[in-house]
Amino acid sequence: MNRTIRVAFCGVAAALEIVLLFLTNLVPTATIALPALAGVLLMAVVMEIGAKWSWAVFGISSVLAFFLLSDKEAFLMYLLFFGYYPTLKAAIENRFPSKAISWVIKLLVFNAAMAADVLAAIWFLGVPAASFWGLGIFIPLFWLAANAVFVIYDLALSGLVLIYWQRLHHHISRLISRKR
Image 1 (tube, one colour):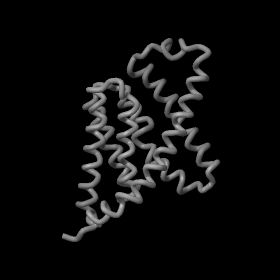
Image 2 (cartoon, rainbow, N blue to C red):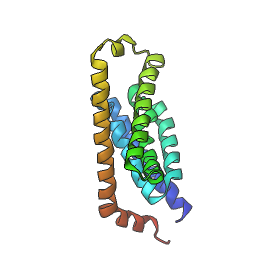
Image 3 (cartoon, rainbow, N blue to C red):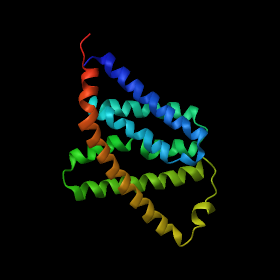
Image 4 (cartoon, rainbow, N blue to C red):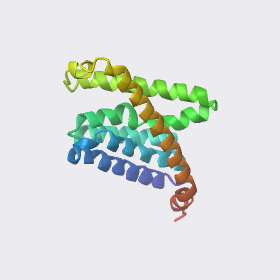
């Protein structure tokens, strides 16, 4: 495949990610949903071009998002988890064929990312720690619910990969592999 086509494909993916992330400035209630949706676009980059290019798209999108987003919590959610997770998910599932081991690794990554997000929100965004710890007994329940939502997100990503492969991959691969 031509390098120019790879760069163009990745540029389009990065631009679409930035548009989705920028929408958090307009729809503040989508602080989690839009970064999650933006990260999904990396699945196409991984499948069509490769993980190395996907990491580059994540890096470029992260730098641009830092400067363009006024919703810094959405930026942190993208940077610390949703932006790289689709690429990491593919690597984990390819490297560890055992579903049990891959689920343990994915859950560890998710929980570490959420802990980092809470700490970054406190240290860098100035969110009062009491707003997190003030939940008291509900913290373990909240954490369990977050893990359940993550499992649903991961399963949805797997379903989207299957749908993309069945319905779009043939068309996209034909477009990007055309000889000029």
